[in-house]
Length: 314
Image (cartoon, rainbow, N blue to C red; front, side, top):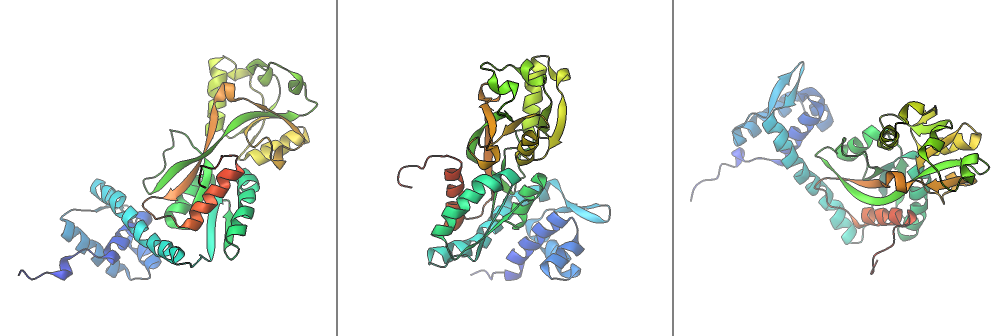
């Protein structure tokens, strides 16, 4: 029988060091995060490259970055580590041990409406579990899931121009309409047939130019040769602030929001689905990670709060 050279086998420590060096683009910061010395991490990477017979990193300034082969290795290895890291939580829950905490990251309006409503139902089912509801910058939400700083993300679908990183998965959570939001006594609230020309004749409260919802509006106005007539009174990063601006009398807003939620209370809300179609919201999960029942239940509670009907048997 051939003698096995165990020292030549890949180890979990090597794979974790590899992923951390990729993320930090350097041996020293990766070593700090892993509570190892820089030489120890360097030796692990060298051993991994020898085992694979491939070069995984190249110099970049004072640090390193993965080669094309290294980037592909990261895409293959990281989901495996995510699966291993999450297996313990799944097994513990299946054995009846509830987690201490479930961490959700999302946008401000979603936190105030869908997530807040969902948290009540979640609390009834998991009274011993503490919920953490936090709002990162939208561009940091995927990163929070990737790093393990949160268990579940909920965000507005950023659109095809901004695909998620390979380390996370976006899955459809629910859809909502685009709405025109005005004070109840506003002239546009009395129009039975609204046109885009009517819309641009009033000061508008809109999302930021880089946001997908804003780009869809501008594309529609461009089609109708009305883009240069648009009057922007304010730009906001969340529908919650846009609706507050409408209530204060700053202008009218085009928002993706829940017309029955408390943020729209007292406002006139008219669906614009015939112009823009539905807006999609997505759950953000770590790719390759197993999903504990508590996390799946929170996602289901959010969908129910958004008006998604339960499937038979749920």
